[in-house]
Amino acid sequence: DLFSETVNVSSLNISGILILSGGMSAAGYRLSSPYTTSQSVNGPVVVITLSRDDLNGIKVVPGLALSNQTTFIAIDSQAIKDMFGLNVAAIPSTSALVVNYYVADTLRPVLYGFGLNLTSQILSITFDEAVNASSTVVTGFVLYPTTNASTSGVMLSDSAVVSSNSPVLNIKLSYDDFSMILLRTDLATMPINTNLFIMQNAVKDLALVPNPIAAVGPMPANFLIRDSIPPTLLIFQVDMTNGTLTLVFDKPVNTSSLNVAAITLQSSSNSSFQSSTYYKLTGGWTASPNGALMLVRMTTFDYNEINYDDPLLTSIYTSFISFPATLVADMTGNRVTPILPQGAKMAALFINDTTHPRLTSFDLNMNTGVLVLNFDKTMLVSTLDISKITLQLMASVSNPLHQYSLLGSYVTFYINENDTSVVIQIADAVLSEIKARGIALRKELTWLALTNLTIQDKWGFSVYPLYNGINTTNVRNYVPDTTRIQLNYFTLNVSSGLLTLIFSEAVNSIVPLDVTQITLLSQANVSLVGTQAYTLTSTSFIVPTAGAVVIPMVTSSTNGTVGINGTAGMNGTFSTNGTITNGTISSNGTVSKNSSVTPLVVTNFNGSFS
Image (cartoon, rainbow, N blue to C red):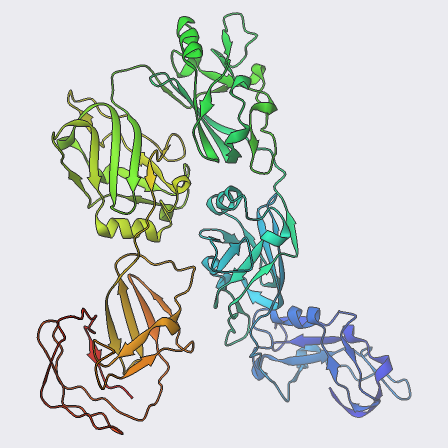
């Protein structure tokens, strides 16, 4: 601030200063932080150093201090005094003074730290300045168990920002993201194995020309609050055909903690009713992986005992469940919320012992893309509607991107058309999309749902449906993808500096491509005389795109120029009218391809090498 005479800096009252965006009704911010001070000596010029709180307070006011045209000052008479103790002449907000000198914010936001609260399901990230909450791209945030980004992490998918513009960005974890974190026993159990990686452009600040954050991390959490909320049973299903109970909880549970003998089955919601009957299971087991859904198989003894009791489990209206807290615990060790016998939970789905066919299991080979559906009776393959089959990430998903239909795949016929097993060859495009969505990367991430219109048996009975979040099934025999991806072809546009790599399948977007491992050659065989080679440097970077990896290359000058005006053929000739300067090689004729080499020839060349 520049005053008309010498002022007493020690009399400065920063709360008497108001920064405005314009005239009378303009937005404004009054300085308030005790850390906003001045180190100036007494004189007509007072330099005030804004604290982080006051600076961010200015930034979060919409339209304020974005340029010299939106930066004004008003001061109260008590803001400062001269050397004789006289108050400064006030500048009211109705005639605020425009800034003389303005420097825009050009600094990227800097990550100060973060914390994860799994009880409230909030990821809280603190920056050195206020950020624009609406600019957040949640898929730019990845949690890792170590500070090494090459390990397997959990990328946020459909979580949502719940904070306003502020230095603190709060992200509410979605059900799917929260579940994926809990299912990782090596992740987010302590601060040291809770590491955050933020991708470039994941969030921006509030400047007139927004400054995006640079890629940072992974870095360990400042704090971690583990989940302390008990799991709750959401859905209970009875299947009397297979003698199973399906339990769906509101979050993943640890199946190794299951105590089946804690379950009591009742014919009514209150076991004390005179007409009510109940039966306490003596045992049973589950083969389900850790997750929100557990398929519990009753023992033969218990199944038969229940069948002897006519009023019990004969319909959805006579199927209720109760249990104590010892039934099961979640991934953190929280015991389930008990359901008392006086308030038993009714089944959401009841399957009687009928003759309708059902899927007993399915096998998946991610190397070959072969899916085998196993039924309890002979099926009519000609009635199969593959579009009604869906593979999904977990037993219960809310994000449509975490499931995918097999539409476009086809049936493989073995000896007999109709059999108890139906073999499906998943189409290459479908298999690639499944991998790209993170589905079926591991056994516990491979679940299947289908509708009752999927297939019929040879007598015309439709298969029982498997619904998302209710009774989806996990893969039985799983073969992971161990086939290396292959580079099918590539294109190069020297004018725009774009090198596009097209692979045989979806590539991992979390582990970055090392561009320094890519070398461009002037011929298919590097050992041939005169072959020119150039290896990309780390100055080139990846541009995400569908179905390919695009690498804009930084131009690098050499001592020669290759000009190509001819054509290249895989089984034909290579014709060039260009020259290689600072050398002795010049060709206007034909160069035959070495038959012992199987090169990958550029399919689209535009421009010249320099």
